[in-house]
Image (cartoon, rainbow, N blue to C red; front, side, top):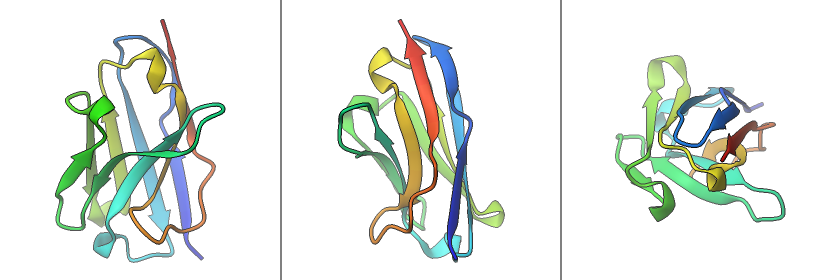
Length: 114
């Protein structure tokens, strides 16, 4: 059974940084295109950043230049480095496959205060 465990969230002031991690088990992590998603209160879950199995990255316009997605296939781990955080980045952040998602993990809460 696939398990996705996100960590690294927290409370940070606007302009600060956080690094999220996601560890995957029960799946061949290295061959999957992976992504970070977020869901703010009262809003739908949205894709924030994605990375192919070959390392090609894409970002939603609102985080370009501030967030960096990366992966360590040897550790079955996905990362999201978030810099210059804004209050509108406040959400629960999840990782999953880019398509044909597995069951969602619990996510990690990111709260950015103004």
